[in-house]
Amino acid sequence: MSLAKVAKLAGVSSSTVSRVINNHPRVAPSTERTVRSAMAELAYVPSERRPGPKSQSRLKSEIKHIALLVFGASTGQSTPAFSGLLRGVSMGATENNLNLSFNYVPNPEQLPSRIIDQGIDGVLLHGARPGAEAERRLRSIPAVWLMGNRRRPEWGDQVLPDSYEIGHLAAEYLLRAGHTNLAFLNLDADSWPLRQYCLAFSAAAAERQIKIVTVEQTRHGTNEYWQSYNPTEVEAVVARFMALSPRPTGIFVADDIQVAAIQPALMHAGVKLGPGQSQIISCNNEKPYLMGLAPRPAVVDIRVESVGRRGVEQLIWRMSHPHVNHRIISGIEPVLVGHDDPQSPPFNIDGSRKPSSLNAPVLLSV
Image (cartoon, rainbow, N blue to C red; front, side):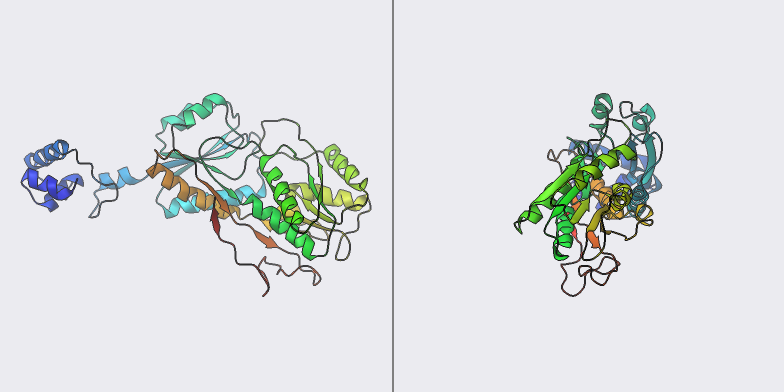
């Protein structure tokens, strides 16, 4: 139904109908009543993106309120990557004129009522999976998960690093360095995204007819999303690795918090690291975990700031398409950051590739 038809039925101009829709103060009450009546009779619903000057009431109604909820973060000891994710979300909200609130939800089983009662138009979710009752309440709101979860979400859209490309880049790095015996080390075997890294790493190696060895440790159950690993867990993984024969020389450690503990333990156990010896690659590019390591491992940068910004964009789409039933899962392509040893594979220290490179990172949707 067009604005022109409303104007014709009401016996006014199209510009008068536009002023009524925009709550313009210089419209006679009787004229407004006539136009509103014509709109009701024709079941005319104004577009949310209609042109023309905006009144203060219209501007206010068009500003959406979104919230970022972080589940299972009772200690507040976030990883360095989380600050980049939060920066990306904040920038995305600012660029799109959104009101953003940020809330820690320490107990995933309990969703504070004020989060729902404050009139949120959409939610960005991060961390542990919420409990059944909290999930039931959140399912009625447009939602987008950010990053991977230890247990894969069954509802809501999701923006996360491209797990396949992470594993592929790790394998490519080690294979180009000449390693033909590869291992994947992981202190959190039950983590869904880390398992995806391992599968992709194995698949990329299999393309070269190379098998990998997986050495993993199960993390003890906890509701805490951010958790460090105790020395016993590290020692168990390192001991199993050292018992391998032949022992792999190309090592992919699942993430930076793990490599910060595993690399020194491997070196203490007698593993020699460097070109022509064993080499390690990690994931995330969380510099505080990597700074004390020598030699410093290569790392796959998962570009968390891009995940945050893309998550806001996806939430805007979801708020405009609440009745689309299928989920939208978007993957952000990572970039490989190599160390600056001249004998390392052909990657610059800033992560850019040298002339024989693959293409620059782009956004992927799957």
